[in-house]
Image (cartoon, rainbow, N blue to C red):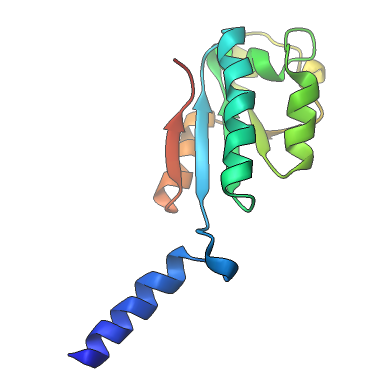
Length: 137
């Protein structure tokens, strides 16, 4: 019985906790809102998340109206977005949305990567064990 308890403690204790006791969070966020208040609030959430868990792996998938946050001619958070991208937060633009909304791909901020289908990327991350958060109010 003691061996079983030790095995379970090692199994579950080491998979969730990194060096120095910090949990290793992997989060994929979905942004579908074009509301600039949502974009500003999201920047505050990123700051809080990075302070609470500096090693967090965070991806933000923008599609639909959420693409506005990644467009150079529409985004009001470009400076903050650049800062967070430099800290390792990954911003992803949905190529399906770019095509469907007739957006100019050249206007996607250079800090953003691309995925073919935003929703499929989110599903794949969840299948890989990432936590999911829907951004917005």
